[in-house]
Image 1 (cartoon, rainbow, N blue to C red):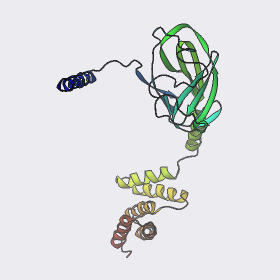
Image 2 (cartoon, rainbow, N blue to C red):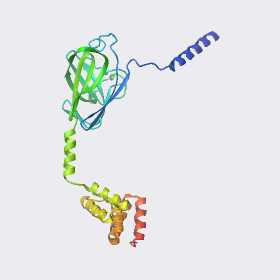
Image 3 (tube, one colour):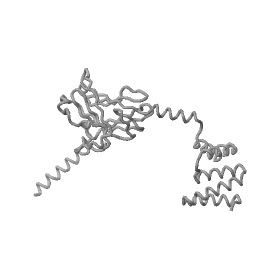
Length: 281
């Protein structure tokens, strides 16, 4: 019995010793980041190697869903909405699964991106988009599984997959034109309520031109359908600084009423103190 215990202890010690040694991963992790138009796209995947093996149709069988790489699921993240195969997807993270064939691949953007390998039970409701793309034969072998961002344009790119002697490119689109057009319309239309409000508060808080601050605040309030109590609070302070105590009291009372309705005790006290100071209570 003592001999068995000694052997077990030595085995545990040996395993513990090996656990402290770092060795290279057979399929190293890779992370890529690419700006496409105005969209940030990031890709995380692992890179198995050929090592003399036949890959497609053998190691990676034809007609079966593949994790597209090794280890954890390959993940792609978009900072904006985007399109794949003519379908619009929401900004966020997706797993990339593929079903390779000799002449074409089916590519799936899958909403359940956590975990390793393909799902044990495939759920069609989690397929956000599916697209079929042709296989292009490469003139040489690619030893390590590789993913790329290719053919970059302002409104899209191709997500490339290369391994062995095969290349597939998955086109995706990003809403650059829509985003830029909206910005142009906003700028050309002139400053909005938020711009005037922010400028007014800045000028007031930093001891700048108080009359200009009042002018900006008046413009902001004229553009806001129902000003909130914190906005009214800032307007009352600017009116008081500009010498319009009567106007400041009127607006402070409106802010006080709004703060009471919202149950905001901090603004109730602030407005109450100011109204006492200005002779409004």
